[in-house]
Image (cartoon, rainbow, N blue to C red; front, top):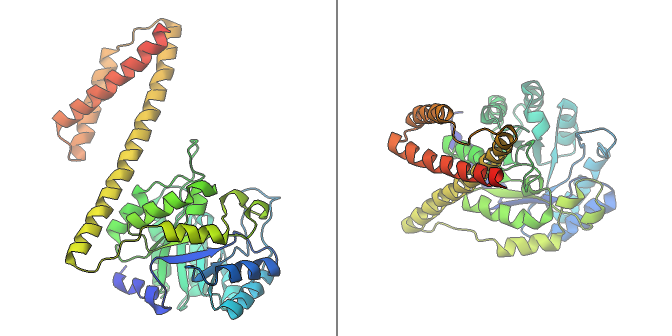
Length: 360
């Protein structure tokens, strides 16, 4: 993408504060609900009101949105509160209707980003629009697919572009609904530092109690904004009830978040250093989680060896592992000495785990 810095112009085009806060219900349910939430958000840090109008669900039978009728409710909320409005679009018809109702921010959802055909259809329908267009990461951890969607929109002469990090699906059970996989948006930032990046902590968390921590990590990683699902009665929301918070809780979160602002060269240095350190913290956390998963596999191997009365140490297998890891280490600019130290320690911990299984 050329002229990347121009992509950030829309951050100031509407006088938006940093970080940008987009808030509102997962789904528009009724006119009263949309207007009620909008008025509760009007005097908060949120400057954009979001609401799902069309709700593509993983399985049929769940609430799938009120449809185009909800766009009129967003229009009315904008007239009464002055907030900008935002909704998800998944095809050319959605785009046409959203533009007819003067929706300010359109986002492409994770299920749409996975399909270049859908993204191209949306890009063609939006060609040359002056609206803000945000692209959520695809369901699966694929940076090329994410960036490809942005490039298709950029090629359609859409200048006000940004991306939303909403986490990635995984078969493994984690503390998150969608695993953040922080290294992917970090890599995106490294490649395109001027592409605005917004966190969707609601979809990553899947529950409201860890939304604050996710928001703080995002700000520490220099994200440009937050999209937080907000409802006046979250427990009775028609969709994704567990991950929505009340407007009053949003206010508390924004008050408690630490937002770094660069005012001079020294401050810029400290902010850059803190961002890099946060990246290291995220990677270290992932390392520990990965090592924990490895030891669980070692436990299963120990149980199998106990059942078959097989010796713990398998020298040939161990030498094969070391040889492969040394080669992979070289490809990642890691010295042989370092790789040997690390994997000898990992191997010893695996033996310890298996000995406990066999001796018990």
